[in-house]
Amino acid sequence: MEVGNKTIAQLAEELEQIPFFDEIRPEQLLGRIPFFEDLNEKLVSKVVDQAFLLQFLPGQLICRQGDYEDTFYVILAGEVEVSAQTHYDTTIVLGTIPQGDFFGEMGPISGHPRTANITAVTKTVVLQLPKTLFLQVLRSSPAIKSRIDRKYIERSLRTHLRQVSLFSSLSEEVLEKLSEKVELISFDKDDVIIRQGDEGDCLYLVRGGFVKVSAGPLEDEKILTYLREGSYFGEMALIGEEKRTANVVAMTDVEAVRIDKADFQEIMEQYPEVGEQARQTVADREKKSEEVKKDPRLARAIKFVVQKGLAQAREILVVDLDKCVGCDNCVKACEAVRGHARMERRGSRLGKFLVPTSCFHCENPECLLCPVGGIVRDKDGEIHFTEFCTGCGGCARRCPYGNILIIGPEEEKPGPLSRLFRKETEEETGKKRQVVKCDMCADYRHMACVYNCPTGAMKVMTPEELIKAYG
Image (spheres, one colour):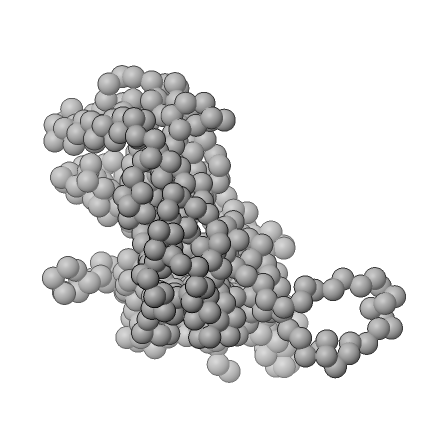
């Protein structure tokens, strides 16, 4: 019996054919895995049906550093090695992970690429959970979330702290002591993390997600900037013994590291360079905030990028309306190459720049929460549909920016009697609803819309480039 490449439900079905195992239920098999011992009945059924058993031979690569993957793994048998490629093209071994442990949690949490290679040391069997299922388990089981947070502190927090400029000069010993004192906190989208005027009692590091920084009342806020993974905030009130000078609100679900005021001030006393770095950051941010407050165009550009969701975009299509002649070659070229146009020459406008209706390829996309894996992010970071897509349109409804298009007839919802007696006509049977989106022409040498624009009006920009071009 082959164990790999099947779900627990499928494995139980095979076992049922053997008389000695004919009364073993899938839930009993899952119950033997300590990691899942406190899951509720509903989630147990989902894991049984949706999580895949995969088998790897010694030396076989399971995860590759730099690949965009959002799956989570529990090791059921065997052992894996963790290694990383350095900037000098050398590989360093970071350690091993034994049977019963797990890996891959930061992919679905942050949406960022893998930070290490994972290779099977022995013959290894893992249970692979897709992003949607993993996040459901994480939200529903405090025990599992606590276990994952503890492992993050053990494995990754020191590396995370080291990558933050504020703590880059600290020794491993100091980072280890600091790691023991921090608290990991989760915020939901739109949660107010810091409110202007409150007492400052801690510093936050962004572990995953995006936050916006604003001044004034939240109902009439003036957006100053936005921050992503690897950034920190809250230091201003800790240095000058002042109250919070700005609001910080979660733009997405956010995972953060909380460092208490006393612990941070102790580090500044012992390591003056940390205090100097923090004071320089405060000065830079105050200067930038003043620039935004005094420059209406810059303020408008930052607000546009935040409110329209562009802050999360890896790259965006932009039309320079001063150069655009309205020929529609961009849409026609897209339709000619793809069968259906995957972008529309309409959308949100910032001065002379139009951001057409086109996928942003967000760093932490909401559309990927597909229960059947119909839409995925590939290893290079491109988001595309798979053969499992049913055309249900769930991803289009989840996209906050309306950038996934539904092509074809809407689903009919007949009453119970008409469903029994009515038969589809041959013409109706041939119709199929499709869900399409821009994939930046990933399979081609050129982007059709950009390449076929006769005036150079269509271009690709990062959010930061758009702010600079407008401001």
